[in-house]
Image 1 (cartoon, rainbow, N blue to C red):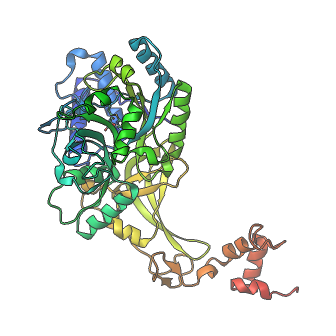
Image 2 (image 1 turned 30 degrees about the vertical axis):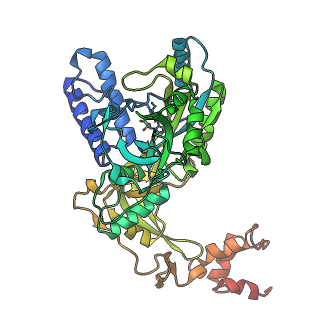
Image 3 (image 1 turned 60 degrees about the horizontal axis):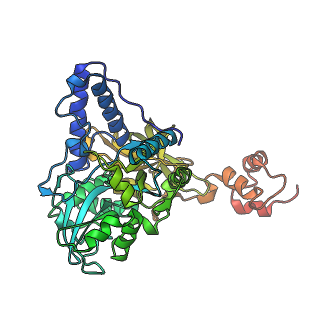
Length: 487
Ligand code: IVH
């Protein structure tokens, strides 16, 4: 868990505090309305922590519009009341903070927590899906936690939320709606084909899509349940749900046909010790980069209903659950240039040059762009603000331009007309462009590679010798190697 960013913006005086509150409210409003926040998550968190620190030191100056202590930073609206508030979660950022939190929870309930559920913190939007007698009737956003917005128009476009449950029960499924990486790519392809601006990342895509009505196209999203509640009319199911451990509630949801994280590499696990929680946290953190959907942390919950009941809830968050946040893996930066490099096989690959940005403890100055079509499809322009993603050891990539930050000054990316290495023509017949000379474009590199130990393993044929052979005109083509004579 190194490189964890939990620093705060330092606010020097009342004026700086007021500006910060204004900026945070605007960002929260944009984030929950369209997903188009001007701040990335990390920047928002640092601002919110700065505001909270200032308010702690100057309690008499707290502004009514402050996001502190409010679900969704006080931004969201809605007119469908929730039967039980849809709360947020408190955060920890390290193993030490987690241990301190468990100790305070155990002090509060007066006994050790019997079992913990450790599950992914899915990076999407919280929704409540109301099923009446097995039929999906209403889909509601979290809103301000007490009332949300009716987004039932999205029913039918969300994988994992069946129209009909396996049994005719009345129940509310709560969970997260998100776009998988594949759905996000698909959404941006369809949107740009329809002349729309691409979504900056999967979360923005889910936020924008969930609220949009009357679009001429539909894009798919995915639901993951992380809880279930009775509704008026649930009958005896209400009593059962109130007594079941959280892990069994999730199992029931899955049995009814609703999607959960159970089938994924980061499936919820029930463990009994804090050490085992920490081990699973580390496993999930390590799996993050390879998941087909975004997570921004791990949620740890007291599993037993009795432990949850005795812990109770505050106005913003339950006391029996905590979000163990992982470092932000996405940042907004600028696309300064696109370089075109010729590989050993003659492939001409674009690479994005970025305004250097720190992500998860390292500085990112470049990102991969797969091929020229990728640039066109994403409608990338020089000078664009772009959302850059980097997790674990993976090569940083651009998710999409942040279209609403465009100024009009952005310039088109210039594509090469001749091979940047040797000046020959470019074969553009495939998605990946290639110098017509193929391997012979970078002859020294490709012959040295072929002669290497793991390939042909030609003893005595190192890079120096290859340069001599090429310079002497003895090798002009890869095949010439085999026609060389002793002299
Ligand atoms: S439990 C009362 N479990 O994170 C318990 N929430 O930052 C509240 N989230 O509002 C929710 N994955 O939208 C829970 N496995 C998970 C979750 C999860 C993502 C979201 C949820 C919540 C937010 C808090």
